[in-house]
Amino acid sequence: MWGRVIEIMTAVWLAASPFVFGVQADPGLLWADLGVALLICVLSALSYWHPTRHAHLLILLVSLGLIVWGRFAVVPPTPPHQNHIVVGVFLLMMALIPNEASLPPRVWRERPAGEQVP
Figure 1: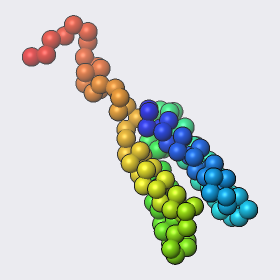
Figure 2 (figure 1 turned 180 degrees about the horizontal axis):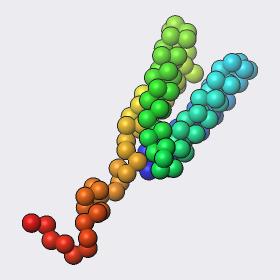
Figure 3 (figure 1 turned 90 degrees about the vertical axis):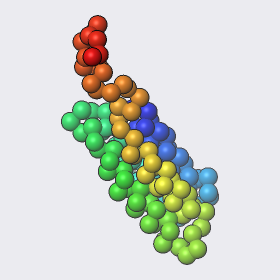
Figure 4 (figure 1 turned 30 degrees about the vertical axis):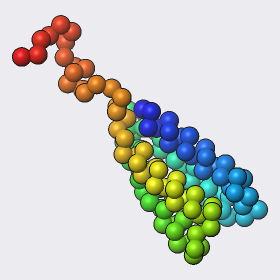
């Protein structure tokens, strides 16, 4: 589940980035970044619950939206929109990581203790 933790940390960065780039005076950009960050946090957190364990895959759509928005909102992209592109590409990579990536394969975990491999 370390991938989900990194997604949440990236969402925190996205929420803080309007203040870092000094665009908090633009309410549209500020609320859009805060809304997208909240959506990423919710989808990552839902992945911890077993019935919605694949919710993090919806972050792929969110990240594609960030990339498109960052690229085509202003031509050429300003630093806040370049940040959207970078965050979107990073989230594309993180969302593909399975929840159980740091665990051994399921077959190994289900084998009774002491059973020998043929």
